Length: 287
Ligand code: MN
Ligand code: MN
Figure 1 (cartoon, helix red, strand yellow):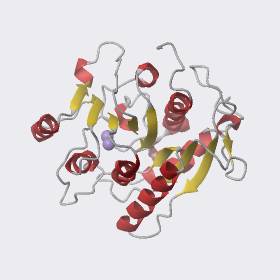
Figure 2 (cartoon, rainbow, N blue to C red):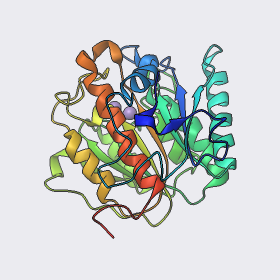
Figure 3 (cartoon, rainbow, N blue to C red):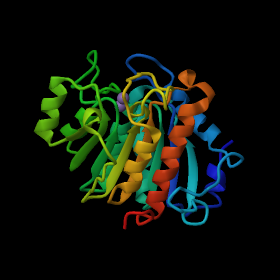
């Protein structure tokens, strides 16, 4: 079903894996449209080696230069609390092995349990958050675990030393004051003119909401917010950043809105280039 260009092996072939793909097919915290639960299957389906090779743009061979496994999906058959607990536990297990998780969402609510697991293993941790939205609502329609809230919870619990949000373009004044209070750096879409060169002092976790991309590049998301990043701009931010990437989630892919799997392919591109930087942090044009 999936092989990431031949790089992805079964656990039995790569017991000492360095990078683990984990799906969380969960969209019960979506506020507008359901569908993100189909994300993991859609990303896996496009990743076939019949279409893609295992090499990243920066010259990393994901098959030879690292050990990548797919751990399958978290069991989401229980209630949301149970799904979050199982997600946290699955990520905890990956980190306990000294490996880096690549989590395929699911809606953006799943980032909170992922970062709860990280807080036990990697501290201090910086977070690079791509999104059209800052996801800093105190609550949405009374739900503090909505997909509109994960970064409010992350800040509240002190799970990140620094948060940089890239691509935001739907910001309320309440978001701005919360960001200011917690020292969140918002790199707003309206201010992005050239390639960003971000530098992170601490290990960095990348949380990638696909609606950061312009709907022209990524129509398969629930919330279309025009005026976003091109796929190239997003890839460049990841390729140019200075720091050590220790985890990634790619969330909010809604396959029911994704003609010709355009957005799934963009999601896979983000996964692939980020995995390359995880495998070889020094790879690329930026020493
Ligand atoms: Mn989001
Ligand atoms: Mn968003």
